[in-house]
Image 1 (tube, rainbow, N blue to C red):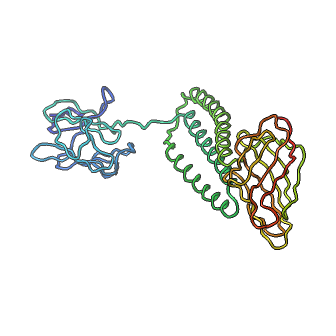
Image 2 (cartoon, one colour):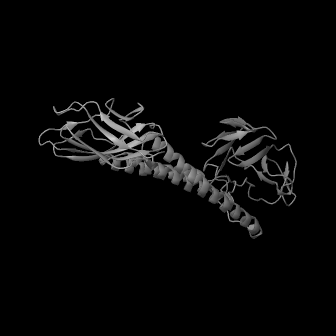
Image 3 (cartoon, one colour):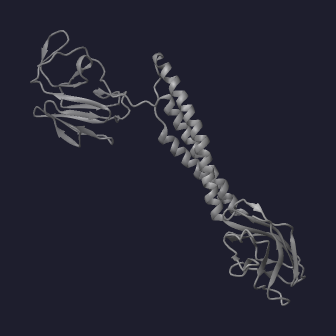
Length: 361
């Protein structure tokens, strides 16, 4: 039996939610199927719980016995176990979305208060400081991705640069959209009594964001610069060349214009003019080009990390940078750049630029 708010006794089963003075009780209608969901047409409508499906579950009565059947994708739970269909006993706990209900049979006598909406678990709200941290994290992610884009596109040339840059822009946009969707939270308005807490939270969030964007952004940029610079060979360094040196031989004019020492490499900037009128001349790097000191220290050219076009058409002029892993000794004052084979001319089999004067390290 159950008692209505005016004291009349009636028979039937019911659901409860909450505890103490905030508990509500909902009599089950006298029919065999009772619907639960966010749909306004549901018998038990839970519109405020966004984790409840429009048609989440059904209470079904057969032979005086109630059972619950799941109709959702989010799941229905009885006593913390997910079920598809489950008979109900007195005291069984039912969870749909964030709302917890307790099933009671007519054998239990209680007093029914005025009908009130179900008490539902409110979604967790992200404070102002938390939202600012999320925004700062997204901006840091954007900064890192743009840094990667800058260095990666710098490695490409010609049409490949355009393809790489446009593809990277699309990828960055997709990643930022996905990250924003994951970080987004529904936010409820705060009451006036929370003003002081919001102020402290905002100040703390602002300081953390400045720290993250300042230190974290700098560290991320430097990390990307280091990795890309080492991979490509395009590190910045100090020019050790005292004065440019030119060598004329085999129809070629070779000029060493710069000798730069970086953290990991020696980068030699070289200009070449093909003075022949009808012969293309080829100067390959792989196992063919070395940079040497007078003491016998020799560096082999790295074809992958060099920016060098090995074939020079007749009458053409080109400028390139040859990258050598490592350095000559800091005491080396003079060096030479040599190609052990020249292809396309019968005037010489090799060519060397000697007398390259270097500043002390």
